[in-house]
Image (cartoon, rainbow, N blue to C red; front, side, top):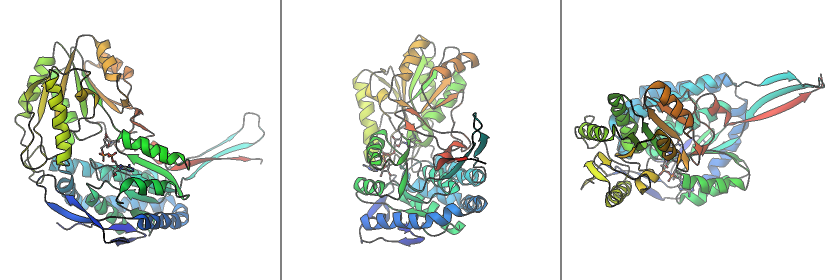
Amino acid sequence: MTFISDLFINGRWTPGATDSRFPVINPADGSLLASFAAADEIDCDAAVEAAAAALPAWSATPPRERGEILRRAFEILTEEKEQLAETIVLENGKSYADALGEANYAIEFFRWFAEEAVRIRGDFRLSPSGDKHIVVTHQPIGVSLLVTPWNFPAAMATRKIAPALAAGCTVILKPARETPLTATHVVDALRRAGVPDGVVNLVTPVPTGPAIARMLHHPDVRKLSFTGSTEVGRILLHEAADNVVSASMELGGNAPFVILPGADLDAAVDGALVAKMRNGGSACTAANRFYVHSSLAEDFAHRMATELEEWSVGPGIDRENKLGALVSVHERDKVAELVDAAVAAGAFVVTGGNSSEHGAFYSPTVLSGVSHESPIARTEIFGPVTSVIEYDDVDDAVRMANDTIYGLIAYVYGESAPALAVAQRLDAGMVAVNRAVLSDPAAPFGGMKQSGLGREGSSEGILEFLEEKYIGIDL
Ligand code: NAD
């Protein structure tokens, strides 16, 4: 396969101001996929300046026209979705089925926000005293810096680019260094769809931190939309504070999966397999801790293990494999360390617990007898490990589920009324009741507590890229 491995600045693919490049590695076999252009300060400044220069014309472009360009990008990528999925597999490691699922989800943001571009509403009313008319309008917030992670390299980019462009903003995308090839495919589709020069730019600075900080201190940058870890999110919030740059943050998670007494265990196992194993567990939405009522815990762990022992593990490019590689050997070793520490603290390996000799693979794993206090229950695992924690009292399950700095998503399985009652008590921006997948471009995605600020997707997603303006009128 051929990839675009350059920067995109002011409507042109460019190697950038220096000859410096960095490797993009296939985690399934360690092979080199591409040498990607490393941006420096000159490139980042050029990207911001191009975005600033393009802003007046793009924000004045009729919403219908902006929407039609997004719609064309949707159509182009729909034609190319298998190729996009293969690029995701090659640089991220996930299975082909997961990559195709991501490609479909990612592309859908262009269709959704093509439709939202023409539905930006305001308000017009008489003030209570009758002294004036209150007009509320929206205007694009301005040049937006979009920083995305490696775990959903297509969807995390389109979930930001689409609402930003629909709102009339111009953008600089900074994809993760592990997965820039998916991002170049998406950006090139936008170029081919007719996005004017400077409206979308892509840079991959090395080192990352100082370049992002520099862009956040540029007076023209008015928006940061970040998806990534809570640790990096905190650093960027500090950087954004100096120029009071508006920040939307989609950060880490530690999702509880609560199985209530009386739950349908078949449904819970089916749901757990998806909520845990989608993307090989490398998802902010991945179920991280399974609180299972003691009447069901042993059966649940056994059935999960029996199912997972049937899974074929290997390179995602082979479409038969249900579980692909983790993004790097480093990530695989982090998962192995968490499992080893849990076992040392008394957890029992029902199945799995092995790292591959070659490539960044980790076997599907089930641990029972995990302590709620153990690091594996306190940290995002980001790997295919099911940690089962037993409880007797539902109040304890709710207390433990909420006992975390995170609040992105939670899952509950049980009879409808008790499951809904527990859903109301969970501190999470999203709760899945008797289902395993919530992500939908039409629904607001985002977290409470240290899982983030703001929402993506839905009609809320576009508001993150708009300023509300109040005009008072004496008629
Ligand atoms: P990360 O925080 O390490 O990196 C995210 C992005 O920030 C990358 O582009 C990276 O290059 C950049 N970055 C890293 N250090 C930086 C710095 N000092 N200054 C500026 N930018 C910097 O995250 P990751 O490892 O790529 O992704 C995994 C994390 O992302 C997990 O915590 C996961 O939960 C989270 N995530 C959250 C969501 C969500 O919607 N809430 C979605 C996907 C992933």
